[in-house]
Image (cartoon, rainbow, N blue to C red; front, side, top):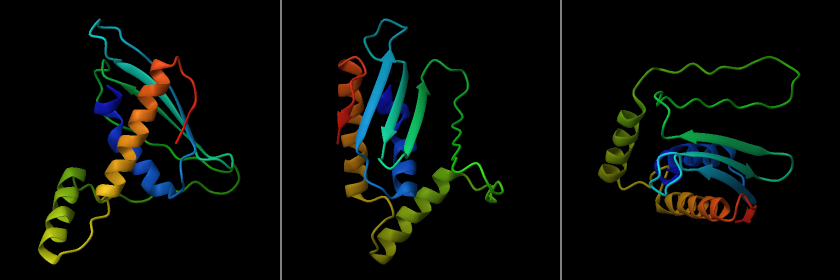
Length: 135
């Protein structure tokens, strides 16, 4: 389940933060008896008091992902305007443009490999009872 629901969120956060992930700690459980976690919690530690926290749940009837980024509690709140274009449409359009013009995509093979390494570490942490795993 972590492999199914977490990759996009991991890709977005690691891309936006632009920092190296130091450790991951994950817990999960299987409620359906199929030996795969259907609920999981992941905590990513980037060092310097910067963490990212994910809750993924295959059993939830709501399949909408929300991201909230927080920082210092002083100052104004900022909510960027979104154009409403479907994310998959933008992603495919970017991919096709890269093919047409021979450009490197924003999320290239190296970015994909990094997400796979994070997922592997998360799975190791789950199997180890939530032990922190270094990357």
